[in-house]
Image 1 (tube, rainbow, N blue to C red):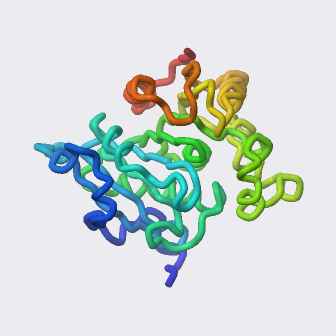
Image 2: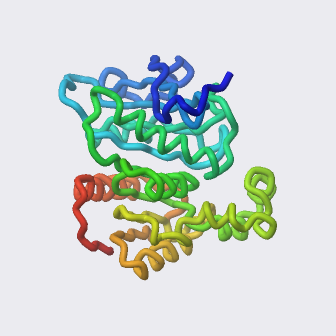
Image 3: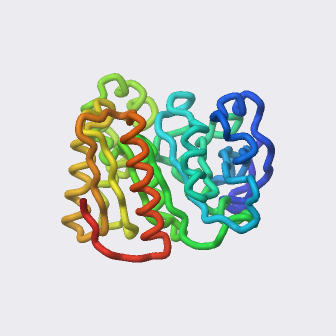
Amino acid sequence: MTFSASVSDGQILMRERAPRAEMEDWPEGAPGRFSIELITYMSRGLRVKGYLVKPEDGQTSRLPGMVYCRGGIGRVGMVRLKRLVQLAEGGYAVFAPVYRGNLGGEGREDFGGEDRHDVTGGIRALLSLPEVLPGKVPLLGFSRGAMMALLAARECSEAGPVAVWGGVSDLFDTYEERVDLRRMLRRVVGHPKKRPEAYEDRSPRRWVDKINVPVLIIHGTADVQVGVGQARRLADALEAAGKTYGLRLYEGVGHAFPADAERDALSAIFAWFATYRHGKEENETT
């Protein structure tokens, strides 16, 4: 069953305790300090799902919100609760859309097409919660999620500063780099020569003029899943367009960061969001 498009994007239909199977992935020491819920909300007439993780112990005041955009597709790259806890430790209520068609949600992912509305609807769902402060919502996008976060920044007035981590900034480049993904991309998006407009729309570095929030770029120089060239070219495009951005490259680090580099990256993300969440606009490149 689908709902009429007149039902507003981001309308929450259900809040429930996450299923036990998900709780088994709960990081050690997290229960009691953080809560996890599975949220069902509306996205362009579809019921879709997302996780909400927030500090629990002794928490009485409202929290700023953050949206985490996962990478991958389907069960590949599914949201990891460890990452959401790490982000919630920064004092945020963290919402992570799992994208349509996952965890019993309606519809089917199309890798930055209609499923981009699951992120913008997720921002609105998060802001509707009584425990979440109003204001701009920062977004963190990992891998394919970088594309999703920047699409949301382009299209949603409630989107705040963005951080992209190991992120796809040009889907044409991904098609060339990732031979193993070509079959999926042809099936879900189409062939880049037959549907260039679909690839263009999923390639943020080609429309940076439409990105009006500060963007922090984090990438490992040894990343073989999303080449570091995608980070550098996004930075170059933002620079040429006069946008506010930061670039942090981690020498010799791949797509998955080791613990010390991960801690440093998270610290940089929290600092970026703290600086720009209220709309500060100062050029900062590193």
